[in-house]
Length: 140
Image (cartoon, rainbow, N blue to C red; front, side, top):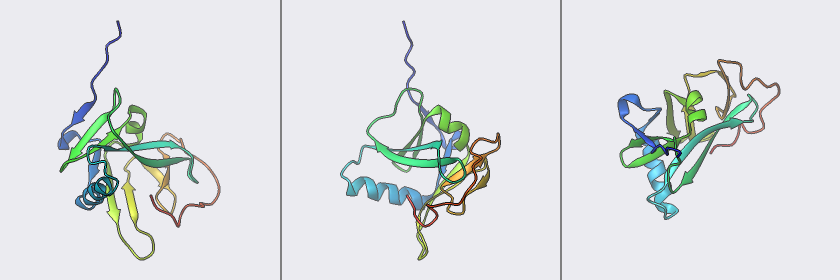
């Protein structure tokens, strides 16, 4: 018989992600605007982007098995185990500026990143890609 693990809720001290008050406020606002107040924000890493690995975000109703769940001021963030390897200790912020606002991720696991901050190269060499960025002017 397979054992199903419950999603793991992490305390602030052991959090996979650090979420700034500005980001929490925007996430809450988006959840209210979309009329999905009980959903969580999934933060993930996938292949792609000009640096080889890129960040992604989406709203989901429930955590999946093995997800790390970070709770901050009534907002839940979900991170799958593979993405957690690349995101452990990262800070998610929301920056509002005239030349391009949006969510920004300060990732201590990235050895280099694209100018827009949406893609990165990991310390283990994953994400190495050549070429320019076509997404530098966009945000999440």
